[in-house]
Image (cartoon, rainbow, N blue to C red; front, side, top):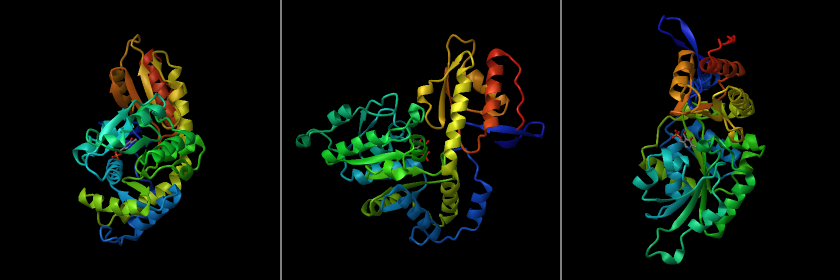
Length: 368
Ligand SMILES: Cc1ncc(COP(=O)(O)O)c(C=O)c1O
């Protein structure tokens, strides 16, 4: 996918599968950034930011949108808007990104209490368990009040699995029945919509807000857009400023994001095909295992069998020595993520390197 200078000064190819956040801006993005029309966005005048926010709201079927620096801030702001009363409770998955990887910001910064429900292997939470976790509104003297349900689609820690339209609608109905809001962490919502074959606006119809990352599988260098009702976005803008996320000439970033949305959503199907190719190839190598039922979008968790004579750190090191970067999870697990800058040849090269590492067979060299 890319080139880096190696120790001897020559350039070496690098296949970077650590995450879909590692992509480099394309030439089209760089040109758009260089030519972006900009103004002060804190004052509300940056035309390119307004264009991106309007376009994202239209695509997602919501009234309004707001550019924020990161997915973490997008989720934080959304949760805080829906839980404006301090001590509110949010129901969310026990291995959701918001719960595990966002520094507990909803509680440390927002005074929001997390009520976790077990995430199933497919990233869902049982509807009965969600309903049973909703606090009795008459118990105010003792309980934090439930105000929000959060789901994540696609679900990263479950290997990028997709929550179906039917499931999402049912969670939405449940939220409505109890007077709660529904937020979707849609960091990779376009992957889910593509894999499910459902229009993205229909997929998130039941949600009051969605946080959509531009810098993951869409390949923009920076940013997330949150979408929701006009009143939600008005409150979100105030919170963004309070959190230090109000930025000035952000048209530079939004111009790249507009190119990402226009050029890269249509490439996701190809990414998913390459992901399946990778997963199937990995499963044919003795000593490593991939749960194929979990491979629905662009993420592959690779398990190294304890009975094999190797470990994930050793395999990661071997791959790195051959120009392939992946994410180490633990002694027997690593993660690979496909994005638009990974080609079918990159996948074949990776498989060949792994085969060589495990069986000692010499790697077939792929022209890159
Ligand atoms: C599902 C999910 N949500 C939210 C985030 C947070 O995004 P950011 O890294 O832009 O803060 C990530 C990041 O990887 C993610 O995978």
